[in-house]
Image (cartoon, rainbow, N blue to C red):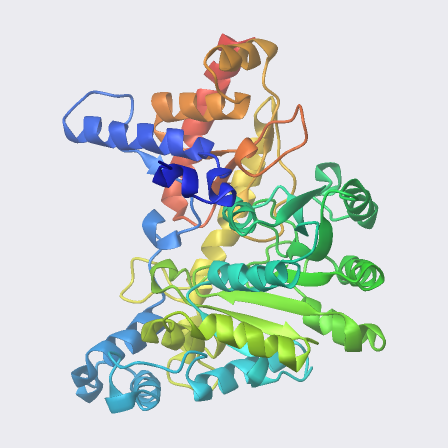
Length: 489
């Protein structure tokens, strides 16, 4: 008799336990020990693994929470404690719901008026490039919409002798890799050039494509801009080269642009793939297919728990769009508050609105309101501090962080540390992270989780945290790293 385990898809069984899971389990044990009064060199554990600003003492934007509060509890709209534009926005949003309630069902593709406003926001972002609201689909987070799009690509190749292949960057956030593999598609890794600031190089794309011959059928190229976890921002020239490559090889472009608002480099600027594609003109602008993803979880908004995202499709055959619509409609609709948060992210207060001056000014987080200006300024300082401190430590090398939410420095581990890691059955950078967790109470991710060139080791940590937390983490890291290198030299 066949067991249930034997009937599980091989695609699911091939997903291995993450190295992070081992660290997370130990972190949970340490939390319990601390709560039970066990004495350690630190009083509290700090987790910088995830890009969740609100879990790391970054307070939510006041304007966003004011509007959402009024939507959930409409009686607040009669209070003059809320600015006029907050009450007006809440009233407008509720007017898009049946019964004027956030508890109502929505259309599977989203509230039409909100989708229309999103298309106008995208058009403004892209310097006037047209945006068709019929090609925008709101989803429960960008990862969900990326999985649905990848699922369609897999279905298109379902009867072919070779599996669908998707080119993915190394390093790359692990949830995407897991999603692609669980669908039965093949991951075709291409390496970003760490020596050149994690640049995406077309020569490497060509190498990766050649390596896939005979093993799978490459149909898509996944790019992350700004980078996660590498923190790079693609130049317009780089994007043009990637588009030309995709056109030549007939690859569908999956553009993960969720950190588009988080750009820190002085000479860096976010430019969307869609905008560059339009500016390149025919034949590229008419033929290259692109899916662009964004989310309220990422960036300055940081509303991870609301689970709101979207995908915009460019140059897809209407018949194909129809099937994506069907895939989306078969699931439950995106939560109402996620729709509202999406509207607030893409249509924040503008000059002339009562909330605009407060929304943009640099105000201390300890004040009654939290502003966009304050959060932006805080993160710019965090990036500068983290980069300087990490690069000052012998045995570390950190490329400039131009955008995104993470720092991914390379750590040159001594041979004795690498040997000790092997003896304990760990990857060397996982061993380093475990020692950092045990001795200093800091939880970061090992680079092996995201992919890295053989013989190199990295750690990743989030900089979307309060300045106090970042300062404390860097202090603990400095103490630990100095001792670690001495112990294993």
